[in-house]
Image (cartoon, rainbow, N blue to C red; front, side):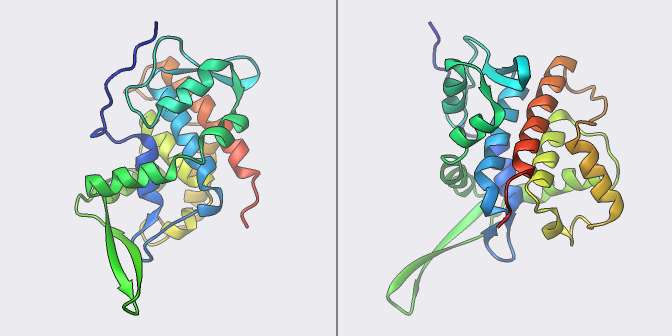
Length: 228
């Protein structure tokens, strides 16, 4: 019988890190809202792959690794869904993605990565506004992505997945002040999207291969979506 592991909410998931990166402090908005649930779904699949909770079957279908559920409650519904039977990546993204934004955002607010202000407009209507938190975690994540795209640093599998998902979301031009939107950056991003992650001594070869397959299959599904 499969047991439910104890959750570890203090360990950020890739979903949370991706949402935090897509948060734009200047405007208080999340970049790429039109395809956000697909991108966040891709982050869940990547997280499951990185933790050896997911495998790729024939025809690039994904399936849960039996009796090895993830310890985090945010990831568990996707594992349960994929435990039923192997699914196509696009089907999986559509099923697991829509429910991710709100709980991931609540975690970021609880952890202090994003602050939420509540105020009254015209003295009558209550409104909430998001602003950058005090942890500086977003700045650290952004620096890691910049090192990969601008400085050519060889990424860990996790940072590679994060970078690819940001690129696939179509939001990289919005990071132009921190990550110059130049031809070399565009080329590097496309290399990563195509699966050219490079060797990574920090990750087991099998885990890295499965993660790259999952993420880059998700990228194909995400990039064909309309952006309007």
